Length: 215
Length: 215
DNA sequence: TGTACATCAGTGAACGCGCGTTCACTGATGTAC
DNA sequence: TGTACATCAGTGAACGCGCGTTCACTGATGTAC
Image 1 (cartoon, helix red, strand yellow):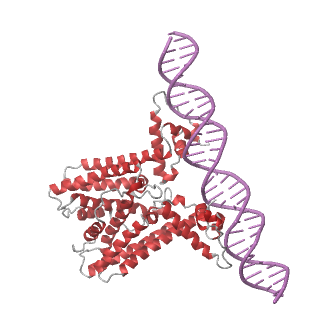
Image 2: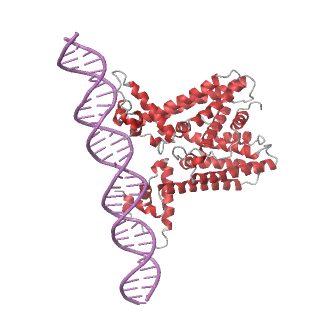
């Protein structure tokens, strides 16, 4: 039906079957980003997007859930990399902290749907309890913790450099993370709200929650 | 198949057809709360839950979307009422502010799925832009603004009473809202995170963001 | 260098399912005479 | 007080659809001899 399908996709050569795995993940990520709904990332939609047939996906993933798990894992790695790279770009600890926070929010704004899936993934009933956590969920937590670690380090460095009089870097980093996440998600959900300038609001949150000296 | 269906539901009498409307909404809300997914709230599932057949819903709602819109509207009204009632329970402005914030977070924790649907509703691609906002979306914003108004008033009262040295109550209330929303959603998404005691974290957020005197 | 063959990366048809929505209908409830 | 009838709140069967998954298969790629 679609013109896309009429363009024959060259079959991978022997030993290069693994390449399709990456194409499947890319197609799934793109679909997730465009539709904003995890439910729209069906095996058949991903297959159409990747120019293959749906059963071919089973050669690379056990089932639909395994594929989605991988997409989420990738998104977490992207977020951690984005925030980590931004932090590494600054020498001064205070600038580093602000830079990391801006990068965190920027990631959520540039890829709103992908960010949402990180912390808003629907896992069905009962899965909000720790006791019934799946392995994938535990992995998500771990990856989320990596991103959080960048924030903790940035706050700690500010304390050591005398910029912050925070007495509990981990506690204050938690408060800051909470606020960054809140801004990222609320801003995407309620764009019609009369938001103050982003730079200013972020500076306020960092200053007050990480207890750094007002600029 | 189900034992529920074998219990015959008495048909409403003439002029009381409107009662079913409420039963449909209650069934949809319950389903949303139990499954945590908007996609699970299908017309057929709602009908099973309410003890009717699916086509009967069309007598009260134009289509599935209209039904879901109403569920979201109800949830917003609940949130606003919960926060407003909590605020009205305190005489002292500072206690009122803290009480309102605790109520906000408590609502999100007691009805995590219902809270999520308020600000995390999936409206498909392109609907993150203001320009393509639907009437329902605009209504959501309005109702969200009502809840926010309670926060603004609480902060303003603290300023007038001399408890807060906030110079921009609306700005600080925005920062506070962002943090409350962030805590509410992150805490539900990542329960395995080593969260500090809730009372303490909320107090910190209110104190630092609404600029009230440390207790 | 040539050929038979195993392997591998997918294909295409089919299954059963639950969905939103439509349609013609039913039978109890209330009303007009 | 009795009866024919309109109304109203739903029912039940059916439609076409996209889905996840299975199964037997195909045909190009590389390998053994």
